[in-house]
Length: 132
Image 1 (cartoon, helix red, strand yellow):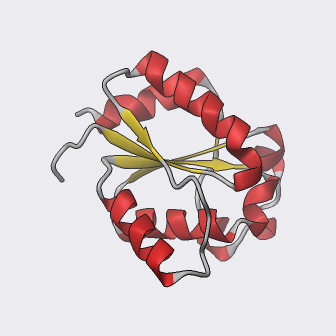
Image 2: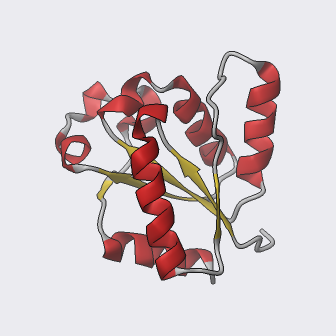
């Protein structure tokens, strides 16, 4: 995959503050990377789904912010599905609550995926992999 210096941020709308925090971390750790995200979540619209798929595929990798809100976030789950289908590098990071949640509480898409704790070292390691 050709390097675009873009990373897709997937988040539930209720977690927009966490998205902003993550973008700050990315800008500090890897200022050459551009954070891309879908500001609106309209998963019921086919045009939105196609735009989302194209945005995701235009990135080097994706970071999913996983919280209890993810369970009901259809737009975020679509974004993550697009990233998995594109077979790109994906980091799933969670707050303490998400990391402690039973896997069976998550949607099927995430049930078998590793959700790492949100910390600087996990994010830095992932960003380093994107830039290779």
